[in-house]
Image (cartoon, rainbow, N blue to C red; front, side, top):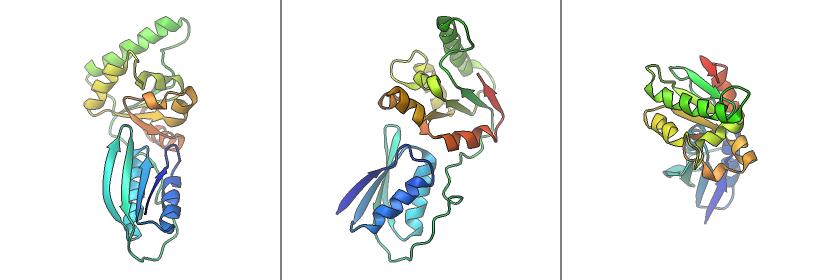
Length: 201
């Protein structure tokens, strides 16, 4: 018997807790959908630790599907929130925090043009950021049809990590249109911003 659970939008260690509860049921195979790399690693590590087998991990758009074959008779251990948190590992360079899809206040059209130019300039500058965080209306920059999308995709291809607020995507109803970056949550973003050299635009 096979079962699928979707943990998208859940802060750690909730994806692990949901996986634990599902594996107690009378099933042979469990597919766990997660929406960020940290949750993917935590769920995989937890399942292996409990004596189960990771059959495969598949990228599905901006999410991951972890297929777990139930097995083993290991006694389940208590889950530590600290052990299975989703803290983003500190990056080696600067983090840029974008909280809106424009630069500054005043004329919206001017602000949006300045943001587009700023993102393009990041491709050309010598000190490219290691991470860009998108929150509130800034998530609109990462979706299908956005003028800045091609340049953001170039930055992603060059190795720039992009964390996109999942709550914000859902609020604007554009989660299915995300075309660049990894969906993240407030805990991950707060952990990164409080431990990094951050520039807010």
